Amino acid sequence: GAVVSQHPSWVICKSGTSVKIECRSLDFQATTMFWYRQFPKQSLMLMATSNEGSKATYEQGVEKDKFLINHASLTLSTLTVTSAHPEDSSFYICSAPQGTQETQYFGPGTRLLVL
Amino acid sequence: QQQVKQSPQSLIVQKGGISIINCAYENTAFDYFPWYQQFPGKGPALLIAIRPDVSEKKEGRFTISFNKSAKQFSLHIMDSQPGDSATYFCAAFSGSRLTFGEGTQLTVNP
Image (cartoon, rainbow over all chains, first blue to last red; front, side, top):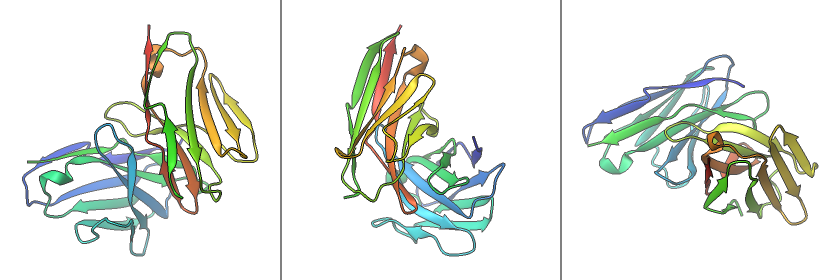
């Protein structure tokens, strides 16, 4: 299957700081990427759809000014958590479709801990 | 309408046994149903998927059974192994988005 990477794999930051997470499709191009958040022992919740060359589409209840998404190229999308707070601590996972839109491949995830 | 209900929440099976996880949906616009396997601290990995015009799909020890009229689908893991111990998510796709079930934590005892 296709390979999607994320960086960093984990990050610890102080409350009020901003954190950037990168998602890369390594062996294919993706005009669309998806960002999910997963709390412990819970399911994946779609946060937003990242679109190359245009604005991201956010799910209802997700603060677009807090979770900034930039899809700079066909292989890179970034999620920036601005002014992070302890309640933003979670496992953030990106995915990218290859071939057809429904066949999504997930990155390894980024664990964020805000102190 | 967008929900996918998954059961059981947790499942314990003996090595060599059959693991069965069930999912149900309401939205008939869903047209692709994948299953994902997730190990702790890792991203989900695509396991097997099915379209609603097929009643069953088998890949190795993994089988999806699909009942379109009942709007239900299930994952069967034959000859379950301790290495299969993970969380399994069913999902349904419509438009450009995946909707996930709540997940099933599978433990296969040696």
